[in-house]
Length: 89
Image (tube, rainbow, N blue to C red; front, side):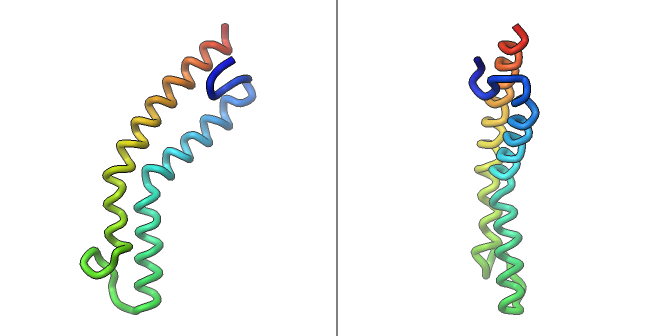
């Protein structure tokens, strides 16, 4: 019995969910920044940039979240490989 994958039916769905979660972790601040800046620009009519809008500065958090997502992805890949090996034996 593996850590993340217990049966062969779970391989593809769990890998896809893991990739989606890693993508959201890595690029979440950028997506939030784009959406927030767009809403502020639309509501005020003024251009939104890092100097006058906090939403535009939120994207810089991706410098922290991208390496965390990469490390989590590498750890997840190792766990998935070990689980698949365990299923095949």
